[in-house]
Image (cartoon, rainbow, N blue to C red; front, side, top):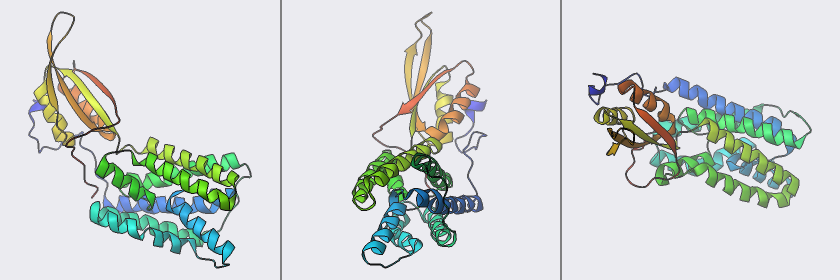
Length: 298
């Protein structure tokens, strides 16, 4: 029977693992796209995109304006990422950190090589489409189980250690920094930069669902097999509840579990394969407390 497979058996619903060369390629593409965005949309709108990219641009602009010293963006970006890289190396994983450094290196090098290019004059278009490109570049790195550096490290650490949506924390932090930067570049630039950052954050939250949770409630008569399947596929536990159907007083069992959002589809498909007559309800979970199996990044 399908539900009686041993726990160490790999099923066709198992999450595929990207090969290291593919992850490295995604990181390089993400870094390259970030560099293109800086030299086009960010340059055109005079925006500060938030995170360490925006902080590096702000420091470079401040030094140039008040001291006349021009410091390369790439050098500042690498310097600012030094501390998060060390924390990530110790708390998250070496392979994860190495791939993230590859993205940082690609963004730093290409920003110094690529020429600046004016795109459009409408600040709304610059903020919205620049934010989309920024969110896409960061999402490519996240899909490779790495980051583009900077505050992305912070968001991942918050998600892993405290199980909260770190992207909102990063958004509010960036908004505060950008408002402060408005005194230097003007309030209009700062406000459009906040729009840019908001679009970027929403793009990331749409494309990358790793640290979001869903609750699964499965009404079934094969609870043991469903619970075994969930554990085998996600390494998350499950709870069995006794229930009775209102119509006909038919006894049932409910399997309760919480899984990562990117696991929902294959878990639901697997439950229906085990029990075609089962009823499954999956809904978003904003907060959990207690033991939770965290998938390793490496």
